[in-house]
Length: 94
Image (cartoon, rainbow, N blue to C red; front, side):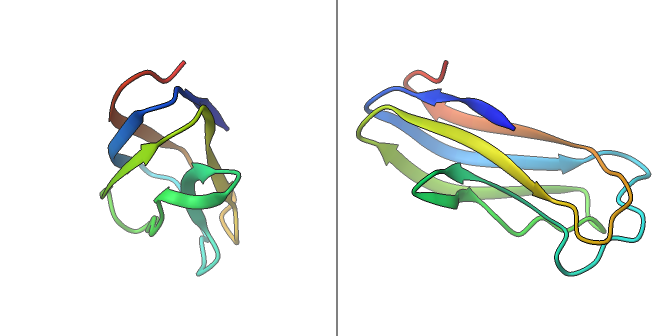
């Protein structure tokens, strides 16, 4: 899922992923959500746990050039699921 494009000199301080209520049935060890870019797909967030609720990954990453940011969901054994991804940053993401 495309999140947006970070402009040059945009700093991502943290990413929060919050799982939706009552879902991710039959998830397994390969069920994951990561947030990053084409150079490193989990640069900004990894470690999603469908059994939990909200997860915060503080990374303080500076994008020195314009870079597309995306979230990648690996279904694993889950039959369905939803989550909210929030990216906290200074600069511009469009």
